[in-house]
Image (cartoon, rainbow, N blue to C red):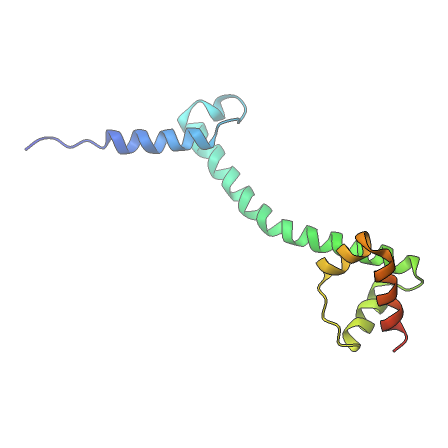
Length: 116
């Protein structure tokens, strides 16, 4: 019986890791042992980053809504409270977009919910 080696498989695995490490600094992109470590760390950072991105966008939307509200004489928490009491279910992303692109429409919305 012929001897079976896993040369093709291991070469493919190493090649894939070095491809993922392309652009890394120094030995991390050239040597397989350091590339394994660098790619593992990069993957864990990427996983965490995907979670942080959601938080950061929500914070950005909140800041934009608050800035637009303060120009109109109210603040973020009062505006959101009035919005929920009025039964208007707009998410923060669309409110922030409205505040940036259509300030007139946003001011009408603020007047509508603050009068109730």
